[in-house]
Image (tube, rainbow, N blue to C red; front, side, top):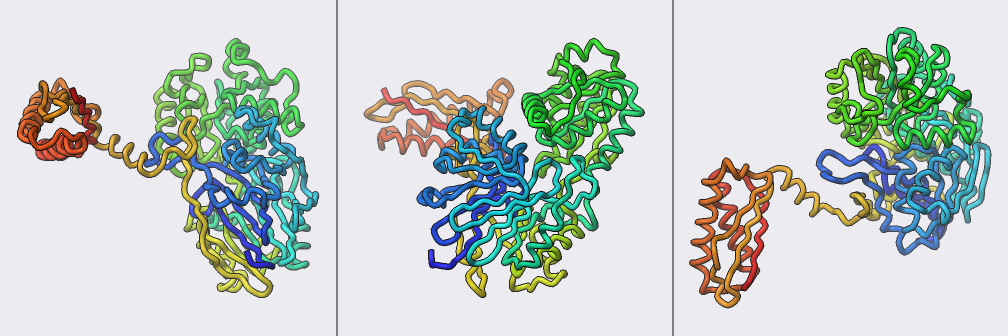
Length: 553
């Protein structure tokens, strides 16, 4: 890399929601910011998570000076167990609560002892090679979030983190307006700012709005209250506990991640829950229903989550009964809408009164609206602007806002994952691309499922599979008996015996006719696929995946 060049390289989070990961590179030194996951899209069949592609870093591990985490949400820390070993376990910098959430993940993957965790807090400044990194507090939907000011020989890069300008945050800590203004007065080369809500006019409501709505729900609910939210949303959990205390209810925590996060947050002092308020489910079940509140996972309709199991009558420890009030205190992440709606329908079928954001303000975003985004730009007054964190339309809309408040159009770079923007004294420009593909986590496999496998899964899901088992003479290729044809997801065998008999007959004719030509497996494999594929399309207009199994005797 040429001298006196500063490069910004997003590996995730631009053109999508989630998978946030960004590199800031100066000469031969790299600082990595965040390492999040993305929930799989509907066509990513069987995939558990999507993580950033770090192939660009594989021959640059010695250049990584540190990995800095802005806050503890999954879309910023979820990929750490998968990426840290491949990155050579670089030092990891995070605030106390964020570090606590990371430690839970690393312990589960047996990586905690090898991790090099360094605790920072808002107001701290650290040196990582040529980078002097300053941390400032930002309000978000989780406590202990920070933005970054990376001071380099070329200029200062400000990374907003996920933020909003909440004037009444639950933890009482405002976004550090004074520090942002001070940075702007000193001069900022480039601002990287959260774009998630750039299509939302005005200001994002305060988290206190949810607290007021929870008070209303607790005041009117006659029986149990069950509230689903993100396990990392410590501020929301605190408001639920506060409402339960005011209305003399005891609280149960359901869901492994929720239990672990609540325990950690209490131990670190980020969650204030008096003794005797939290009870086990067996203890709660002995109380009158109007004295019970439950906080659970499952706000995204995850199939194995506690709320989904309750909705499917598969959670015997806490069955839904008529009269329960169920609150889904979150909005669906793009791609999860169908599963969330399915869960809501099933809860209504069981007689619950279900409250969600479409009908009541039980959730507010943790991201800045348009007016807050303008305020961030006006405070920081950057020379260059790069919108980050959002789908492509969000990035474009944020770019328009920047132009409206006075950033020169030529100084605004709307990037997608992998695109490089490079800065030198007096200039900024696009400078090529690096690999930034999706990397899929499927079970224990990381990266072993690619586009080819997904295409096969999609084909199987659409038209099913037919397995044709044939035994042939090794020398002549002549069939030694009638082929066996098995259908899975294509046709129901008992009701389609006529079609399968025709397939066996047609296949027998073709194999007999070509027996003297060759006994080579590849020839027989192709012949079986062609014969059955043509027949099945003629009869059904479907294209099942055909798997020949040829045994030579």
